[in-house]
Image (cartoon, rainbow, N blue to C red; front, side):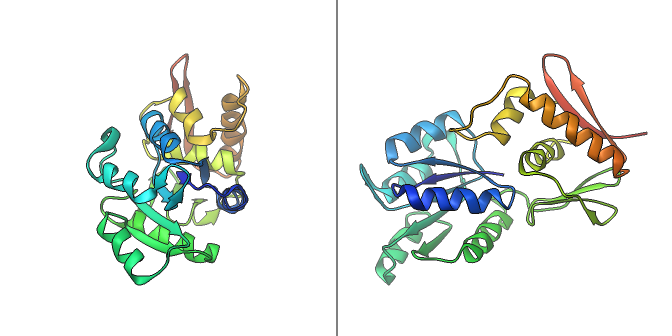
Length: 227
């Protein structure tokens, strides 16, 4: 899962990135509306976390353009995170098209629960169990398991697996996999993706997952159940 945070407080952005990372979620961060529009044009995100008081305007102006079809995003789930928590502010945010509205300060556990809730809705990321062979991936709880036993996977391997499990039996392009597991600020080595895939293959085989990850030279990878 990849989120976009639009927030001008670097300390909060760093804290959120660290917390989401511990749950296997990749968080990209921009500090203003202009950079947010550029990020939405160039990258795919599963949800947005949007502050209101930004250096170049109210975050609700971006929300209004999103709901009007900005960059072809359609209905990407948006949670507004802001210090403007009065009733009138909450009503304005929800009326502008926000899927949820959370006033600062907030507990990380509540933000995660609200994120799971908006992604369960029909317009959000399909929060259903995906299976191939004996392997299952639960996007709501960010867990991969084999025959009910949860696999202990580092964040990037979990993100690779999630991207492959979203399209079982179909090739996922290298560029799409790299985008799924690396954020804006990450330095990506040329063989990093292949190294993650190699380690993931060994762990799936050792766990008896009943799946194989096949490389399509120069194109990408696909995951499918073994015969």
